[in-house]
Figure: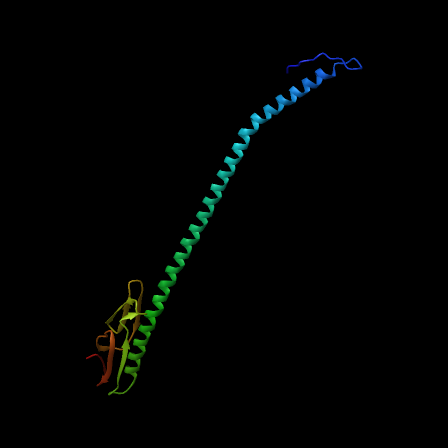
Length: 171
């Protein structure tokens, strides 16, 4: 600390002016020191705020990504369940037609419709083997027991009739 005293005498004969100059210089030096330290601190605080903001944005994006993936998985599971419900409806309809044909007298004849696609979007196939009907799609399979039949099912109108105790399909 440097001190400069100006010699001037006041009425009481003391050196007050010199002390005021020293106090002002000390205060000025102190302010300059604080300004020198305050600038980097202010910059680091804004930098820290920027880093914190980016971290929060990153966390928010991660949470959104997780929820999006969970929602996509739920949609996929719903799609598979919906497809299975549709194919099982068609399979049970065919099964009921065959059980009905097996339980009635000879001379029974009936026509029923099997759609080409489930809800006009999903193709499927119908396979008959060993008194079992199996319906397949790309994601689902449905099987059901039916009475022994002769013939195969096709998309569109199918004709079922019973003659001499045997059930015929499209024959």
